[in-house]
Length: 267
Image (cartoon, rainbow, N blue to C red; front, side):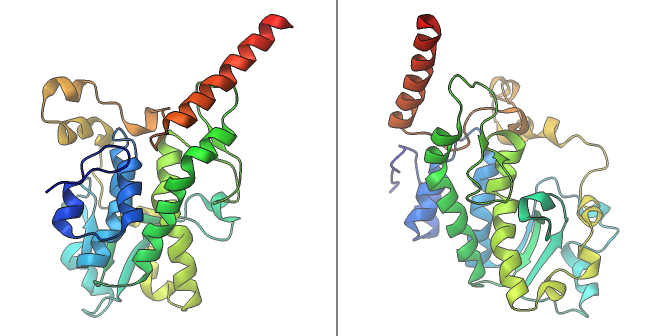
């Protein structure tokens, strides 16, 4: 039996996989389906918590694993026994974290099952999704049709985009980084879970195709029908909200635009 979320979307995987976390379910189905990457980012910590193992992005190319980052090669860094969590540290986007550290990459992650920090990761992101419509409403400027920037500093130390590539990063790897980095730092496990060989952005790039063709490949991967694939727009080019806004928020946005137009006419 399939359930429906408050936004009206089907929930097959939550029934099948016994998710059991209402906040995660609501957040997942509140994300605009056009932003498939954002949905995937929210799903990943649940998978690792539930099942453990390795998450490797579809764009991962193990044949290019000259750094021993993925699959069987990873054990060479730990004498055959990796730590409970293993992450790549890219170090990008330090401005989001007050310059103290950068991004942990979520395209490659390893974990034992049941590691509690993954719950904290998805709960933090689910809360960001829950508050997204209110932040969008308060940060959007009247009449604005392009990028909306969250200047509330509720989650990061600089204003951040709420659409496109930056918006997805903030709900995905950067959201995870905010929780995970603090967790590992408090336990003195940063070097253990992100060894030197995994602390360079290029160690992740060694697992990606040499040609930058991922954006062009996605429409073939995500759509069965050729006509749907032809309509595909990479999420980095989208300016629509990542989270589906409620009718009330849409109405209030419209009212604010109308008020501005009226004022222009009167003055």
